[in-house]
Image (cartoon, rainbow, N blue to C red; front, top):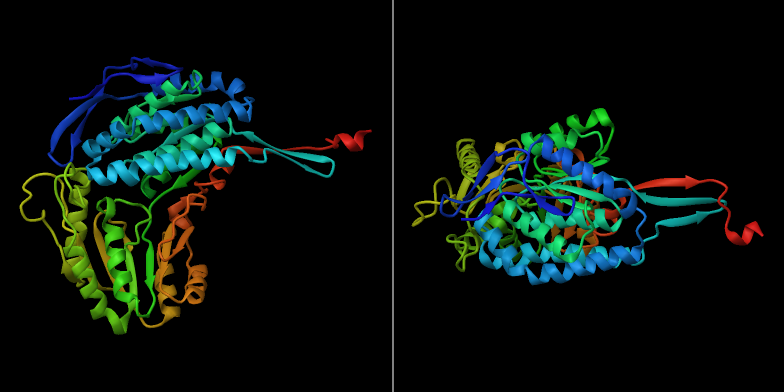
Length: 478
């Protein structure tokens, strides 16, 4: 059973300020997987002080020095892929193929993307007699979730380091082992002391002190909207920058064409991926009312083909992350039944043959209306709600009838129509036929957050913009 008893602060693995610990439960077995030291405000103070001490030197480091570090990180990351994947399967229940594939690949992809952007990023721009300079914002507190741990760590840490910031990372207490390995990777790659720091712990014990800390210049948070509101409140007195990627209830508009059944089936597999634990999951599927029966059969068949079970084996879905998450999903599935939605497949309880572990049946509801709880609340599980639309205007109206605005998709063969519909969806990340791009800005409207991550756009939140007036080009000074 792994025991993580130290934090990475100031370039060293050091003992925490208190003896408090927390246990990590394997969600597939309900057994304790390991014990981790629980960080406190005193640990956050030490980590922030280390980051503050390192900032003056790292903030003026050359692009070449930062590239050298990140390339070394890439080598170490590749070397530790197997360790990272195993940790993800044990701590969050990601199936082995997903953990060793897309989960680990996302972290590597963001690192490769950051390297490519850093090579040519315009940190200075001459505008007439004024020099516009992009400078690192300072010490960054990064608070990351458990559902795609490496993706969310990588999409914050690598742009922060690339722009010259220093970092204090507080990962989710439910996925501490992959974060610990990530810190080992940076240490082995030669990250300068204090440039990257790791403190484990929960939200009240470590996250809240980090958000409120007066020597932190930016808080980047990914998690629930409820927690994001508290983060913003804690950060407000010091007027630090706060960027947030929060919840979603994203629409998938399936156009009325010959590919409808195939598009429905593909969407079912996509939303069920990672056991539905994805903030941008397209959990509201909108189909033409005249073809609801066809969509239901396609969804039923696709969901029935998904295997659920031991994540160390060859299955499509593992468990959800915790008992609390399992109970929440079960409650919302029951609400869907009680409120009159048509249960196509799945439902409450564990799948047949699984007596323990937080496994959820892949569940599809049809004839859902947008006022039902399962159409309004983020379920964060393998649950799809299918709604009917009358025409394109109605589909767009339904898609935008939500307090969220993180993502969306338009599925169909008519590219011109798909483009026009995508423009009308009020969300930060809207794909056409499930397109994917590491360079695309990712972030939300309304209660889905603020700021943007991914690609070049992920650099901007970590930079301050300075204008130096009268900074004439050399040719003009002669």
